[in-house]
Length: 181
Image 1 (cartoon, one colour):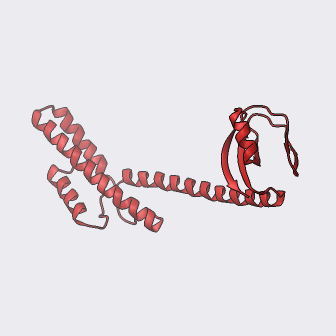
Image 2 (cartoon, rainbow, N blue to C red; image 1 turned 120 degrees about the vertical axis):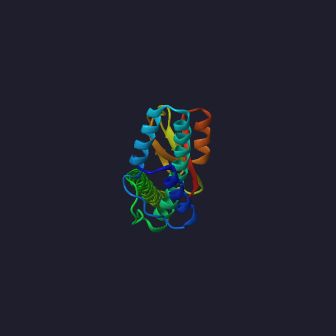
Image 3 (cartoon, rainbow, N blue to C red; image 1 turned 90 degrees about the horizontal axis):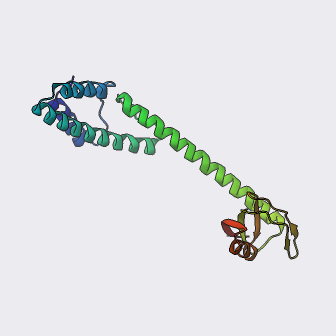
């Protein structure tokens, strides 16, 4: 089990290095075991050591996590170092979140492009609004374009900005986005 001196030495080495240093896979489980033993001792000295160890390990974890995240964002991979299991699991979860965000951004860009193509083919010009209907609405007569509708709550449509603003004022719909066609 690590001692307070070993923990402070690990923190010092991590602070002095720009690179992420190796740290054994069961490091934090050993620290937890040490903290459990100190907690069971229930002396004032043990409480002081417990608090100091906790703060030292917290600083060490945050410094290492910062280095690991920088590496992950810069190189797109988890550092090829010996890292504790807990840090590895945090990085796996961050990688999953980044993957989901990237997928959503890609899908949004694809939808936006498809939407722009639809608008250009529809013949609409000027300022348009992407809207979602809150209430049922019969039909919209769009000059030179024809009739849109009927609409049910939750329906999504593209309408001229002036129409969207009027129906928004009447609380019939919400504007999701505005753009120029």
